[in-house]
Length: 239
Image (cartoon, rainbow, N blue to C red; front, side, top):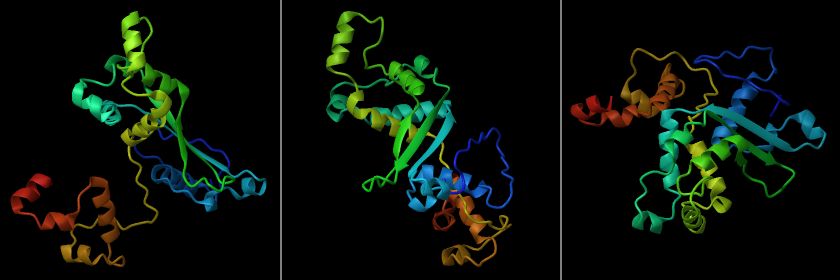
């Protein structure tokens, strides 16, 4: 990816500093994360040295650690994959065996694209086999080892999901349930003590502190202009 041929970075703290000489690849690491998160496909992001050798394949992998909030969101996403008719007729109490699913401590998602294929316009996403095996074993509506014959037959004939057809959808559900990556590609002023709503409406990039406020809005998920139009009671509740 750009100046990087092959690199592994372990972000193991709340604040992580990348330090290095110019063109060492500091920005490339952050841009690779951004490309992964937002599916940014651009042949200009290929490493020049590798491209000159005819290697037009690009791979970005991220390893995530799981959490309780991840498991809850992942189950919600997976239930939406179940056939609508089945959801109407058979109430789905749970998609996963919670105990088995918590064996999943981490997983690695990999996005790959080969620019040699003219029809390739988006990344292919996959997950490491060990993680997927744990997920598969935790799905309640699929045949499991040591089950009685009747349960195995019923689940085989009418599985809650068809992994032969829906594996990619489950992997996408994992990605959707993972933490968001927000990328800021410019240096903004520190957050000002105050800023007028009129200045936010104008959105003048030259206004001191406005970019920092806009970044802050994106991080906390609040639009201050919209908030300013609400009643005092709603403002307080929203904040």
